[in-house]
Length: 160
Image (cartoon, rainbow, N blue to C red; front, side, top):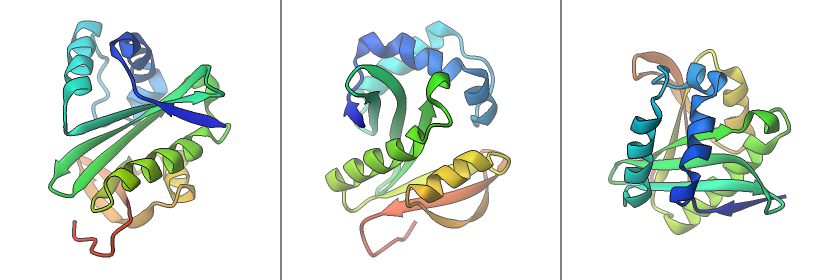
């Protein structure tokens, strides 16, 4: 069973390790390696950013499994980012994280739409988002890549 906790400044290295993983970099829209100093400045900004919500998921309150980040795109749209630690991949944790995290976030913000953009070749993530209840909206060019666009929301008006 996974639990959610909020990150602190002490989690900077943990996030850096997740973000620097080769598989994560490959599927990221910005796939160049990250310098730790750049990451540290980014991480500290995001912790204070009112338009960003970050969550760490723990297994039985001990092991940090992965993270989800919601970033505001505009008035009622947020984009979701997710990563799972290498040692926890392939065990269903990403689906559980997406369900727990998106449901928690939508309960706090019932009028927003969560947008997920997934590179066309990342079929594992595509299936994970589908299992977590995200709805396929179509194919789009996102950040220069042909991408699947999925959404999840609580409200009836889904104007994106």
